[in-house]
Image 1 (cartoon, rainbow, N blue to C red):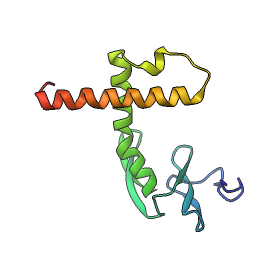
Image 2 (spheres, helix red, strand yellow; image 1 turned 30 degrees about the vertical axis):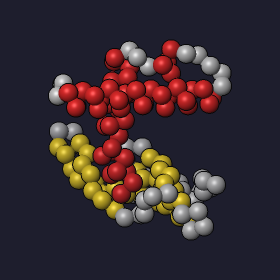
Image 3 (cartoon, one colour; image 1 turned 45 degrees about the vertical axis):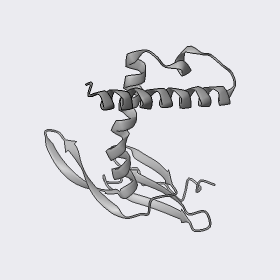
Image 4 (cartoon, helix red, strand yellow; image 1 turned 60 degrees about the horizontal axis):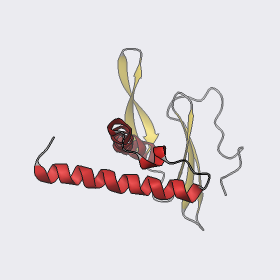
Length: 131
């Protein structure tokens, strides 16, 4: 159901901050492409096409550029996902990485189990005042 390539294609020389989007009213789904260094594609059911602002480095100078709200939200919350991945791999207790299975649903269940164990570990340490 993703829009055709012609609908969401930016010109090759598009400036940073250029946006094209398509919205499906029936499903409430937004598909957008935003030009950063390279085109970045987003698909969302919980964001509109409101615009925000983010900063990007051009040489040694940070300059503000216009971005869709979905890109701003992604950049704001991606650090939490990276921290989760780093802590699971850094502590060496990832069940999903230890057990090999060809079945996709086994990997999903093991990933959920990893997440639950990580959350329990974090909550335990916060409750006890550990660092």
